Each structure stands twice: as C-alpha cells, then as structure tokens.
Amino acid sequence: MIKKLVLAFLLASFQLLSANSLEDKNSYVDAVTVSVGHSKDHIKIYRVGLRKDFDAKWLKSSIGYLSGYYELSFNYWKGKKGVHKKNYGVALSPVFNYYFDFGNVKPYLEGGIGVSLFRYNSIDHRNTSSKFLFEDRLGAGVRVGDFDFSFRYMHYSNAGIVEPNSGIDIFIGSISYKF
Image (cartoon, rainbow, N blue to C red; front, top):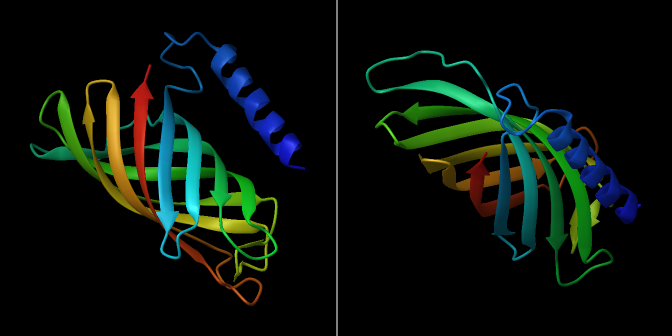
C-alpha cells in the first residue's frame, strides 16, 4: 500500500508538472514545498507538496490582500513506539492567506482545512480510528521573491466521525519555491 501511495503521488506530480509548461501561467503546479516538523509528543513529520496559487486577490487595500493556494502533499510520520511506528499519507488542502504587501517581501497569515488519507489509523500510541483525517492549519510566513518561508500549527483528526478520536498536533516549518 505504501509503495502504491508513493507511486500514485509521483505519477500525479509528473502529470501535473508535464501537463503544461512550467512557464505557462495556467499550469496546474507553480511551486514545490518541503516541510519538516514534529508533534507535541515527538512524532517526526516530513512533507513534500505541490502548490497552485489562486489567481484571485480579494479584499485589496493599501495594507495587502486575501488570496491563497491549493496544496497536494505526501506525508511521512515517524514515531518511536506502538504497533505502527511509521505512517504515510496524502493530503489535499485549500489554504487562504492574507498577504501584507511590501513589494517583493510579503509577510502573511494563513489558515485552511483539507482532507488526508493515511495508510494506518494510528501512529505510536495515537489512535485516530480512521485513515481519513481532516488537516487543519494556522500559520505565518513571508514570501521573498520566488521563495516562501513559513511556520505553522497543523492538527489532524477525524472530527469525531469515529471514536476514539486521538488527533495529532504538529508544529512544522516549510520552504517553498515558486517556478
């Protein structure tokens, strides 16, 4: 199953990247993201993502504007104990950002709720009771030219659809490069 998830992610990535030229403004992907973090109980988190910025800018003012992006990510979680010490999954999230526009430097605040599907319904002694989880995030960052640096809090849980619902809280740093 893990190999199938990785293969599906790689094939989707290749398809998205090759569907349109990277210089085409209408391409499906316009940035890649690498993230590293940990949960409050020391589960290590690694993520690789593909992003597509929204074309729209809402609530424009002299301070900034609201926009965002979609992110498709592959997630690898590494714990230390329990039946499942490792877990893999894919996630898709729309994320909204409020950018403070200072020209080439754009600090921002972000928030989003997405969905994810993991190989197992547990990691270490955390039982999420479901392989399907919601991915919530709140964060802050700064865009400088083609690079984006961010730090965020993420929460994964099944929102009480199935009990017990032992969610996982994550603190994660990310670097993105926009083509």
